[in-house]
Length: 144
Image 1 (cartoon, one colour):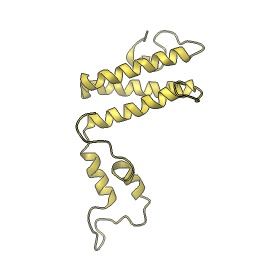
Image 2: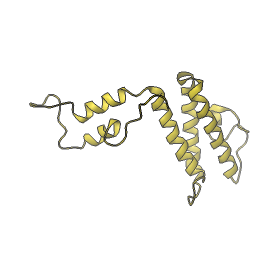
Image 3: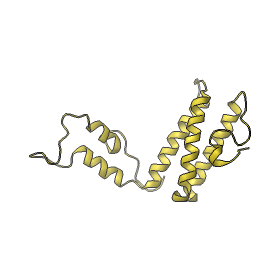
Image 4: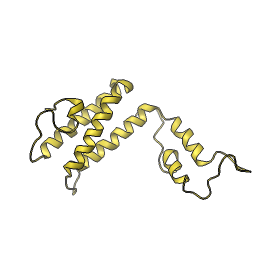
């Protein structure tokens, strides 16, 4: 990722917005005596500062990580190829759609990771898909 900004984590950003919506102490800005920005407003400001390329890349990395685990690439975890197929297909759609927007320097490593996952899926499959029918190949073309 670029710069010194990061995707908000627990306690900030989107997670804080989700957590604060259930918080009994979150104050509405119109409430009498409302102090500094409430958590939801702060979360919106936090995520507004994160460049789109970083949000897209983070989403892709989460999909890649989950797909790798589902392909059986993690120790002591059985493969679940049905789940892996869904994740790889979603990743392929995201990478293909986002590539023109995020530029080649960001898209290339995502494409490389996607291709590696597609090949790992093919290797893990007992019954291989026909060329062009594997996960995500609707968007990427046949992977060999």
